[in-house]
Image (cartoon, rainbow, N blue to C red):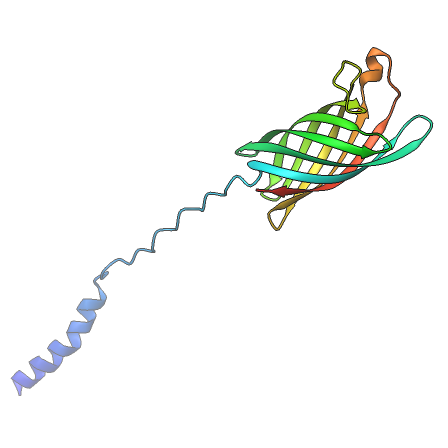
Length: 171
């Protein structure tokens, strides 16, 4: 009987001893490294746009096609493009822009453009400065811009404001 009592007491005491031990420590799986977001605004594009030009005394409209490239480093974005316009005010322009990606799909930027009317390559061009906003939709840009002729500051050009909207087909 003593042996049976010792076995029963031994079996009852074993779980109590095991409960005092901490057991194997479980560690959570390491967190996955955050995915590096691709620079969405880096690359080149072809664009089509329509503009309204509000002059001192009249309003005109034109359409344009162009091409350009952007470079993105973290949230900073810089780029250049060229446009050829047709309509009431035909000509060509070259533009530089710099801004910040507000999120992976939205870019706010300032711009400076030099525009020459009637496709002439001479020194009677106009300098303008403005702001723009571009949103990426299905990998392509939809943009709006507003710029003001600042050539009037050096005398010689009317005080005009241009608003433009268009699509940039990124590749």
